[in-house]
Length: 148
Image (cartoon, rainbow, N blue to C red):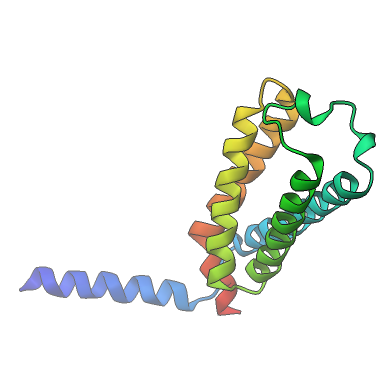
């Protein structure tokens, strides 16, 4: 019986800690949201280049790992870029759906950069690192922005 009282007391202590307000990690969640908006805008720019000026790229579609037309690539990145930017904006205001979408997109980004690490090692490592920070901030501390 005494054990039940201890567990209830621990629960109350945990609730009182959360009631104090957000921790310093709330700033990292905002950073994650801003990074998602920035990456989304980069995707949109790359998509517009692929759609309107596909001769800009040195490698033709047949030289890519996947033989995909640049128009299809552009539309895909345009859609994903807008989705990432929207999820970043939603994460900043504490939306749960945005945290979920942000984590999924960051995982996909990390996997894609792991696949292409031989082509762009430094850039891939930087992006994977940022993806891990975004994932951590959104999963562990994303709820703190909802409390503002």
